[in-house]
Amino acid sequence: MNSSSGSRPGDRPVAENLLSALQTAVAWLEEHDYRYAVIGGLANQHWGIPRLTHDVDIKVLVPNTEYPAVRAALRAAFPERGRPARPPQPLIVDVKIAGVTVDFLLAIPGYDEQVVTRAVRRDLDGLSLWLCTAEDLIIQKAVAGRARDWQDIEGVLIEQHGRLDLPYLEDWLGQFAELLERPEILTQYRAIQDRIAETLTNL
Image (cartoon, rainbow, N blue to C red):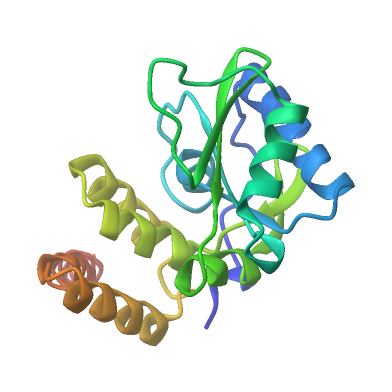
């Protein structure tokens, strides 16, 4: 079962400056017919247990792999760098909108593009946008692998319990664990699932 059929929507307010930056970014992408998916902390705020986030992360599908053209278009629309002290990266266009750093992450062929094509239309504090699925949020965070990412994953697994596409999760987590030679991607996910199942059994 796909997470697009359910969530715990509604009263999760987004900071005003983040919402303003997000609204501007999404409006530009939709006006110019770019497919996208909001990911990261704001997606976690919808699917999991909210925590403080300071920036906006958006995965963008690149038509015909025309990366230079998309980078140039984003830079022309939003000329202020989000992280000027860092060297530019070919797949990340970091900009500043309404005082907020917005990272446009340019999708590469394969799983990255799938994150965008599987995105679901959701309402985030009154703003209708395309959001990555709960499953893809979990997969991206497992690959990132920081302590806070695993905390977020546990929150999503709890909040979306019974609504997730578990075979899809197992498949992609297994593929990344093998590709990156990081078996903990899958074993840690399974350990969290087992812990949640045990907790629910004892309720």
